Structures are given as structure tokens and as C-alpha cells.
Length: 312
Image 1 (tube, rainbow, N blue to C red):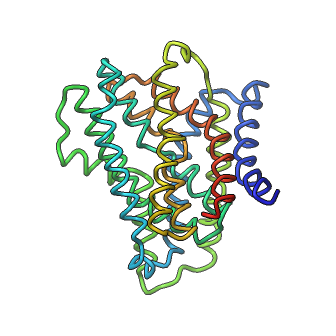
Image 2: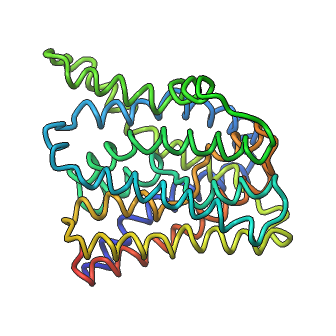
């Protein structure tokens, strides 16, 4: 019963925010055009404060024992390589290949992983998730740019990739937080308080917007790639990651922090990236919608399973 309560408390808040957003749009209280503009503001203004706040409070002295970060990076790169060779076996359209591969390895880590880790195991797991995100976000962006550019038939230069990564708001927030963490000065409370409040506000707002912009068009014609991609993303990869980390005797906070990076839904940023790089943006958007809704169920089940197995 305790495990059921923990899983419920971790997942239900996500559902509530999404449902409120969907209801507000349904009642005509907000227009979708406004929500899409707000989504851009949240990504560019509020998300960086999540990264800043978590890395500003992080104890970097623990990095000497942060094998879990290296594990997450290596595991992600292995998934990228395997998907690059496997996806073309069942998908012949280049505009869709990159989208499917991106959906498999790219997670909505900031929006789901960090809050989920905090909800289930507290600040220690949340901080470890933030540190992983700081390293994984550039990897996500670099791999996505190269993959989508490859299938478009273009050539992504190293300079363009580096520029795009450094311009990512999450990376900007992470770098700023790390710098202020290292500096031999302490920020005054009058600055720490608004930064913390903005960080706390980001997740509910983003989920509200997500709920207000969800659509289910053309799901039937894309049923096969959606089923394969989300099945691998939400079930196969989390199972493999958990099994391997359990064999390697990782602690609960490290295991769950990495688990959250692989068990969370497809990153919302994958949609605008697919749109800007001539990929199948409709399919990319459907991956975000379907994986987000299914993740509410799969994450709930995963938390119960991990708790019953004594892994977290």
C-alpha cells in the first residue's frame, strides 16, 4: 500500500496540471495560439531557472563518485547508435527515420525527470538528475542535429552544432548555475528567492501548456511507428537500464536518477527541431503527445515495480 501511495503522489500532480490545461482550452479560457507563445516563453525563460537552481545548489564534490553520469552518457550513445541501424529496417522514409530515432533516445528530462526524482526520492535524487541533464542535454541536441541533417541529405558542421548547443536555454542555465556554484561568493536571499520561485513555477506551467495543446490527429496512420517507438522508449529501455544498474549495484538515488532519463516521455523540443529540419513534424508531435499520456501510466507502474523489488 505504501508503494502505491508513493507512486500515486509522484504521478497524479502531472495528470492534474495536464488536465487543467486541457480543460481551460476546452472551455475557451485560453487560445492555443497563446499557449504556443507561452510555451516558447517557458522554454526560454523559466526552464533555465530550473537548471540554474539545481546546479547552483549542487555539491560538485560528489562528482568524483559520479559514475552514474558516465553510465547515463554511454548508455544514451549506445541507444543512439543501435537505433540508427535498427530504425531503417522497418521505416523507409528518411523524413520519418530521424524522427523515430530521436523519439527513442531523447527524453523530456527537465520537465519530467527532475521533478519525478524529487517527488519519489527527494533532493538528493533531484540534484543527481540535474547533473545528468546538464551533460545529456548537449548530447541530445548534438545527436538530433546530426541525425536529422543526415536524413535531410545535408551536412552539419561542427561549428553550427556547437553554436546551437550553447544557445540552448537549458545549457545557458546550467552553465550559469555551475559558475555561480563555483564562485567564492554566496548570492543574497533577495536573488535566491525569486530564482527558486521561478524554478518551482516552470513545471506546472509547462504541463498546463502541454495539456492545452495536446491533439490526436493522424494517430491511426502512424500507429505502427508510434507503437514501436513508445514501446522501446517507455518499456524496453527502462527495463534494460534498471537491470544493468541493479547488477552493477548502484544505489537507489543513482539508479532512479538515471532511470528517470530513460523512462520519461519524448522531449517536447523534438517537435520544433523536426519542423525546422524538414523532418516529419506531425509524427514528431504525435510522439510527444502519445508518450506523455502513456508515460503517466508506465511511470506509475515502474515506481511500484522498483519499490517492490527494493531498488529505490
